[in-house]
Amino acid sequence: MKTTRLDLPVMASWMESNQRRLDGNPYLSGAFEAKVILEKLPAKKEPLHTLTDGHKGGIYNGPHFVRNYVDDPAYGVPFLTSGSILLADLSNISLLRRKDAESAKLSYLRVREGMTLISSSGTIGRMVYARPDMDGMWSSQDAMKVVPDRTKIPSGYLYAYLSSKFGVPLVVSGTYGAIIQHIEPHHIADLPVPRLGDAIEAEVHELVEEAAKLRTEASVLLYSAIQKLEDTAGLPHLPRNYIHSEPDTSVASSRLLVSRLDGLFHSSYHKSALDPLMQLPESLRTIVGEMAKSIVEPTRFKRIPIDESDYGIPFFGTSALMWLEPVQSYFLSKRMPGINQYTVNDKTLLIPRSGQLAGIIGHVVYPYGAIINGAVTEDAIRVQAESQDLAGYLFIALSSEYGRRQLKARAFGSSIPHLDVRTIREIIIPQLSLEKIEEIGTMGWQTSQLRSKAIEKEYQARRIVETAIEKGAGYDK
Image (cartoon, rainbow, N blue to C red; front, side, top):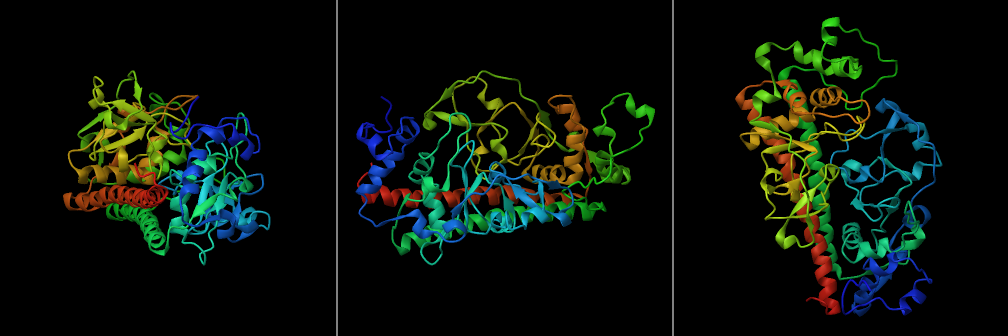
């Protein structure tokens, strides 16, 4: 028998209290362990639905609907899926047609600051606290919304509890579906929410709010740094959403076809970034390879996962690099031969080398949180710099539309596009004065620092909740 704790084995009586479900999820996810501990907690517990307010009582997802996407922000609203709610950078998400979003059928899918968003299809139970820069976006039916009644409970405390090691198992325990798993609002409506006292709840709420503000500040700083780079170099501002309302046609000289025949490389999408850069004086432009210390594409390696974090290094895939709070796939032994080739520091940028063009390929990441000093898959090419300022400057240059469009347009391959060391080395970027490079680079580095601080704030908030519950229930071992 599989158990989560030896002193809390799975009991046959649990099936009766869980509507006779025979699948393992409700019993082995830690949900019953959480319920037992919460029952021992003398503090008052209230059903979740009594603490929410709004559409359908404040716990809802939405209907299935045809998604009509647009390119022009004037006619669309940023649209979050259950996957994109996790992203640290929301500047390049799809735009849902505004007419549809604001219709009576979908208007309540608008995201408001302070909501808790829960992925309710596919990978269940991933949660995000709606921060200021998410306010006014729309989300899909696969992102369940929990809207707190702020007269009854602090929104940050509710999120911290739901995303804690006690809340997540209870949310996930309602999962159903053999292939594509789902969860519905009524599955979590009666979830018990412990009331830990005004002082603790207020402290936790403030930490979560601080984390939300730090993440918003990081996004604003990133966009400001990109704008400063473009203004200093005298480059026109390119829209984050490429508008192509008409068929894309362009003419390329035959001499340019010797090395590349693929259309995207010669498209106006690529030219819109490349032409302004090439019009700069030669002294005001350079390539990534000239500014970077090294550009490395690690070889594939045999991975032997371990469970104990005390003896291992967290290992991250490329998708997790994009998240607000990157989560490791597993741990690798610190004693694994050659492990140092795959660990990264705060002077190393990471660029996914493969994937669909509309996805993460070419999306540069400045490590933050547990990624720093962690191990990263060989599917992320490393761009190493001599200093944090240079790493920050390269991060801003490659995060701009001038960098991003070049990276995506230079990818090669008909099925799964790829980047390699050479294509990244040849990316053209502005060459500014040392003073401006340091100023903009510091802004790039600070973006990483703010994201790391936000992760730490949320961790502190969850630990306060978890510690209070464990102590109150007598399980603080």
